[in-house]
Amino acid sequence: MDENLHLTTRVLTSMLSSAIAPVTLISGMAFLISIMATRYARCIDRIRVILKEIKAINGDPECKETRHLHRQVRILYARTRSLRTTMTFAAVSVFCVVLTICGSFSSMMFEFPNALTVASIFLVALLLLVAAVSGFIRDILISLRAVKVEIEANEVVFNEK
Image (tube, rainbow, N blue to C red; front, side):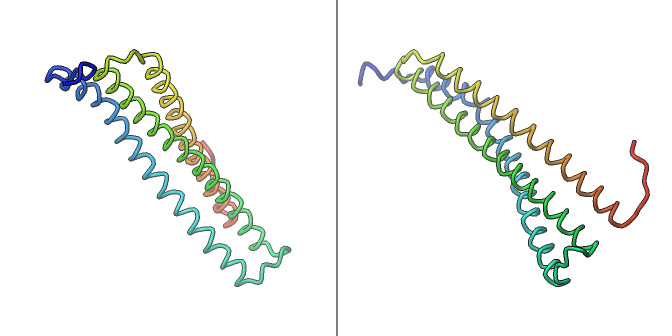
């Protein structure tokens, strides 16, 4: 057996144990990406429907309904751009976690001293995760603004609290 390969049962158990937390993090991030992808697809579908509505009413820019529909499209487009960026942050974060796992395994198997590199990549993964969650919260706030626009367009009076 190669002297550089120190794969014993104890080392293997340690490697698998050290991978549990990052794999759990990946699962949670995959769930977040799935939710964001659903919201993204919903925005895209809604934009297409609204554009058909604009076309059906001949899109007169002076028409109150057309202006309202254009405002909805602008809000939805802002959401899609935000969600795309947010999903990118989350996906790159997952990639960094995978690199962390690979770095940890190589460190344990080959006794390669890369703890600072692995820790740095994991820190980047966590920062990207924070950015992704922040973007997700931003999308929720933007969608609330879109609902408010819809309420105002229907001239419903409400009190904000």
